[in-house]
Length: 266
Length: 342
Image 1 (cartoon, rainbow over the protein chains, first blue to last red):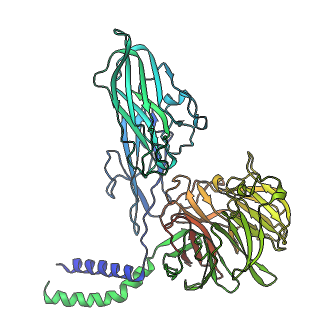
Image 2 (cartoon, rainbow over the protein chains, first blue to last red; image 1 turned 90 degrees about the vertical axis):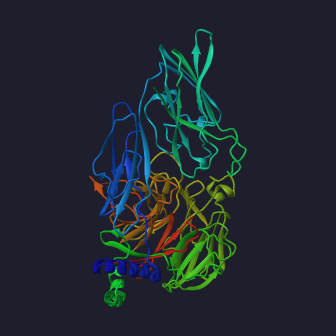
Image 3 (cartoon, one colour; image 1 turned 30 degrees about the horizontal axis):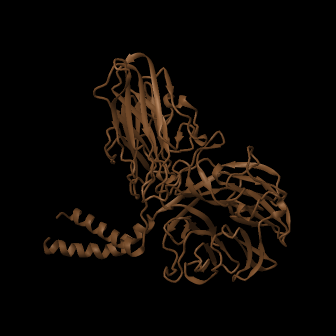
């Protein structure tokens, strides 16, 4: 063992002992303030980050990995243009524990429906009306934000495109805020109008694990892949709200809220 | 490790025992900015949790004997009295389940307390040792309350002449003005569209820093602002504090101090800090929060940067400029003490 290593080990040991004996506090940093117009974009979106704490740095990744002190420094706006990008950020400073990681997913918008029919949301959460489904606005986690449409029941949405198209993927951005009784949908079914047989044909669906406990307030993107799509100009989505809140929740047995802010069609 | 290096270690170790603490002591966690920096101790309270438990620690004051009083909604002991070193001196109070606001007033040389109880819907005036002197029920005379439950007082401020201002911070957000005997005079504030209205009027204090123009400062917590009124309740101005859910204003010397329950950017995620304003209503320091910055005289959004606090609810500044921080819903922690760094 070199003299220097010994010295370092001793210093660390003594520091630790001192901290315990003298009850010195070690604090964690908070995550940075992220600023962006929306998580949805047409061509690209500029994301900036701020953290006014002396001698600190914000580090980020765009590949889903946990940022470390070796990750790039977030000191100027980051431009995002890929179809789906997971931005992960963390703060670091000497003398503090690094912050928890904060992740935000950004989505490039897809094809727009010519007409969209949906039921009226609950009067308290009308948002900006049916336009909200395809206005490219949303992604914040405040359920009182005007970007969210809130429902207390299942939602049937009908889309018309004007020309025949084969949808391969449908993404529905929902909110999960279980303390506010807002859960992910229990299931999603996608139908296409089959002109040959003159009926709605089931072409895809998903079953999110909506009853699972999630302490964080977050956006939950529901992705439905349609491997065997049909060419049609009319689609129907049935997004079922969770009918009974699970037993671990104070609202057990009661219907959950369903919040939606955007549909992305590819 | 050979014998020689062992000897070296021992020598280093012995030296270390004397050297390291000094170095570390100089590098303790410092919070705040500019002329208002503090060293924090989370282990100030020496209260025995088995004997003197706390629930939410809501507000703190210092009495004229220099003691530090804490109000908690734990009905085993609603008021804990400490010395400045954190030693428990005494405790009293079992009948305040919604103990929320604690204000001290020196009435002709005698300390008296005003407790706001948001479950009893009352303001209770007591002696310093807990004897009830006056109880104010919901102000029927204001003709804005359908019943007692609609009135949920959170905090009081007492004018030099003894007039009482009660903030209905969890009810209808009115400020109720009484005379020293508890006779209703007027009410003002309340909710509405317009600068003179309030949302979550959580705290109130008297600002006597300018003797020529005494005024009231009221928290409008959900609007992230303080609002200033004259003593008759006429609205004067707004102090915008973007991002900060400010609890009651506390004035000591030239400065105004306030616990910030949480940051608007991270609501309900234990994102609180403490803010300090100078006598020109400019934020000069945030303890555990972002360094304040102004662009064209407009304050930029503030937010937590260091997780030193969870949900701070009140600050108390003692006669030696030390700060005590009481916290709501933060794992039943006792108050922290912060000493100024000069």
